[in-house]
Image 1 (cartoon, rainbow, N blue to C red):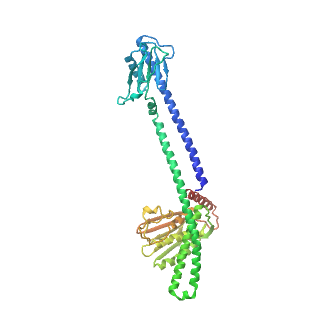
Image 2: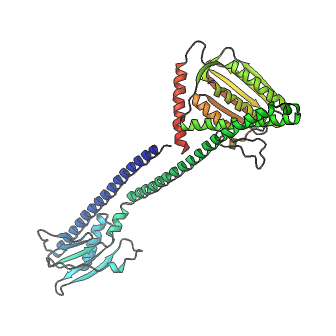
Length: 452
């Protein structure tokens, strides 16, 4: 993944999160203000009804204005202009608060004009099991504007409002978790990108550095093999052939790594050409049969195709089938028994490769197309390799829009099927070319995203 793309992802994510935080903060503040306003209205209404009840009880009249006065966010002064009975006051307060469903603890005090002091009344709680904080009680100041009045204070007003905002607090906690997860994801993504770049640089540098000694070894082995003294000595000739064979094998592995690196970097281009499938399959079978016969095995082929053409990269088509046949030969039980079937339907060519090998268990079958993945065999590795063959096969099939399926049973063998769209003779398959173009570019984009 490019640095510019990562920067855009982080920037857009930060903008989105900032917007979510702003909306959440606005929602929380607005909810608090609404609950606070609702609390003030209910408290004022309950205190006004209490004053009316006390006035009716004493037979007096209420002042024309300034009956309920809010002094602080949680304390009120009620002007009544008549003497107040403490017992009746507590009864009316509890009654009116319950009527308005304002179940919040409160305390009250009555002004005594003879002593010029606030006479503390009581602390009333709607939750009997809850113990109040004694340090917060009893602070109800006097008011010099009125003669007969009482004061009410709500010590737990903030807790009551927070209790009404449980849903908002819950979603705010979820948002906080999402922010932490996003930050952690960005950290992991950047860390994986750095490790992936180190891995790619190492593999690319290693494979390029291998090209020079491989070429030098091949030239030296050719000269060594062509010498008359070596040709006259069977033992030296055998060693020369081993050197050339292993050099060829190493060169093919290095080329495979370089091809996969080009696919992941987006520098991979398919050389599309029109060719006959039966001709290509017969050539592949003939070249592979020699290798099977050397191991005492059999390779059966049943190619039920007439003159069928496809548009694809012939080199990669050949490499794919060679890889699949090579796996069928290498992972045999004793002697390789391989069968290749090819037949056509109305719109597709179906190629199947069956073997009687060791097979693959279900737990590993879904991961065999992963890069560098090899089925675990303990500490014994009878078959050497880098775990790139099937990853290469899957990459090419995805790039060319082909369907690849593998079915396997441990101890019985593996069946690989490849489905390729047919190009009718004399007809230019523009639809296949268009689909190949989009599948190739989609493969590049998905590879860039998953490589980090």
